[in-house]
Image 1 (spheres, rainbow, N blue to C red):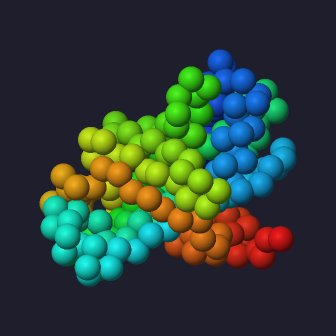
Image 2: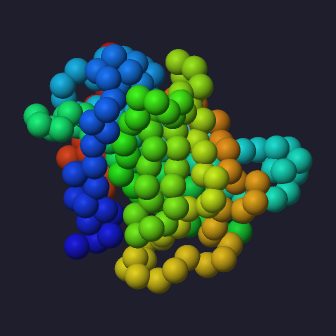
Length: 196
C-alpha cells in the first residue's frame, strides 16, 4: 500500500476532542469550509504561491508555494474528524513534497485544527484568519515525503522547512486545485465536482 493511502487510513480514527463544545466545533467548521459542512464529507482547499520579490525579502524561506487540503467526515459515535494533506515546492526542488497528518479541534484553543504529522514528524496548527484565508503554523518544522518515491527514504536536505518557514497565510481556492493531494480516486472525483 502506498504511503499516502496508509496515512489516510491510519488517521481516520483521530477525532475532535471530547471536551469540544458543539458550538465551538461548528464555528471552526464553518470557518474552515466557508459553509456549514452538514453531516457528510467536506473538503476545503487553500493555496499560496510566493513571487520572486517576496522570496528575495525572505531569503531563509525555503517554501515557494503551498497547497493545503482539509478532508473531513463525520463518525456516528465520535463526531467530525479531520485530516490534512499539504503539498509544497521548495526553492531547489522541482518535485512536490507532501506532509500528512490527522487533526483534532479543541474548544480552548485559538486553533481551528491541531495536527500531528505522521511518524512523529512534527505538528501543524491551522487558524482561521478570515472568511477566505487561514494561517498555518509549523513551529518546529515537519517531516516531508516525496509522493513519487517509495516513502521509505528521507527527503533531501533541500526539501525541508527552513528557519523562515514557520507561519504561512493561505487563501481559499477551488477544490480542484487540491486534486494533486488526493490519495484516492473517490476524493479526486469529489474535488473535481463543482460546488454551489
